[in-house]
Length: 263
Image 1 (cartoon, rainbow, N blue to C red):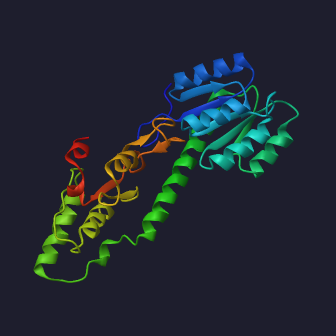
Image 2 (cartoon, one colour; image 1 turned 45 degrees about the horizontal axis):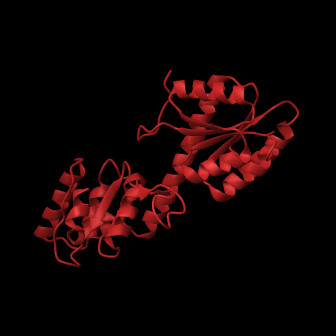
Image 3 (spheres, rainbow, N blue to C red; image 1 turned 90 degrees about the vertical axis):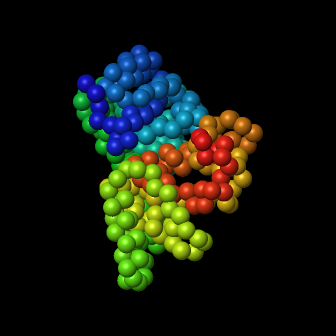
């Protein structure tokens, strides 16, 4: 059975932290077979290290582990990675601790052994909440830029022709080139296309091609892994990934080098 995925068709990424090797290995195999992308570690310190090296949607965290107890790990996870959801796995007699952890930010808890169908449903719900929280952040940032198509002022035949063309283009998934002198409203037109498109509920990301050097712009667009180059202290998501299912607007793309444009 394949698990439901996100709108981007990317598998839900799960990190299992449990010192019981057999349980951890079997659970990881079962979840992988369901369509999740799973990594297992044996303790809390390893879980925190794994979160610094890669991105996960949900952490399955055993409450009782020898190196760090689950409550301590859960608190550290939420402080360093507030968008990651935590589901606690608890044995008999530790439910009170699990409830306390939920009050401090964990998504939910399950008692061990747990039913796979129940765990699957919980993982999907937790990942969906993470996705919605991320989208809400992007939408709030978008609103702060006051991106609204009704900012067009005027009723001339030329403006009506532009608005008609915007409405026509917005229905397609084609790449759009907007030309015009500085100050005529190219970004406004791009936002209007986005706001009238099927992608309007998803992020609209603006890339100012004139404000960054080529190396920095490439890092902003494509992201990088931790340690990919000097100064890359952590995983960075590129704007292409952030804008996935939405719109990426390159402001003054003509200022970008041909080499970077070709990528």
